[in-house]
Image 1 (tube, rainbow, N blue to C red):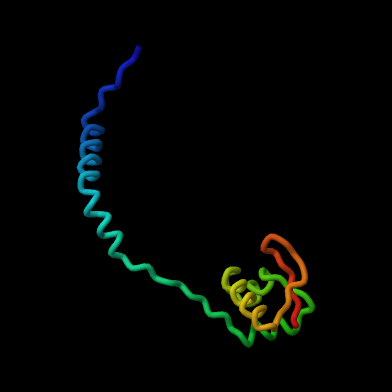
Image 2: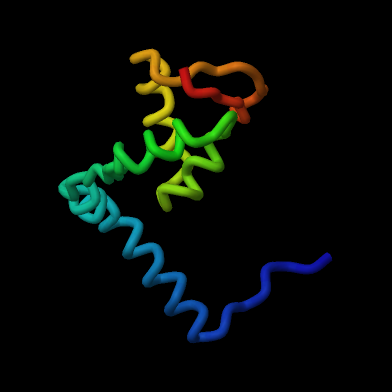
Length: 103
């Protein structure tokens, strides 16, 4: 029934420019590969964290992150480290929302 619509001159220019950019795509990938990845590390204030842990009966990762003003992932990494050392013990929770108690 219908056929392809004839492109306006501006649209034809854009499509030609896009095709030319695809042909030069190999050079752009090299620039992306040259960028070095930076690692972001957040340092948890250990004395402040231990003070919060000792003063609370039970706590979660979310509470700890809120008190320390760090991301939940940083607080979780800190808690897992403390759990390995025996400073805290996991007593309940599920699916990443665990409840901890100071040991």
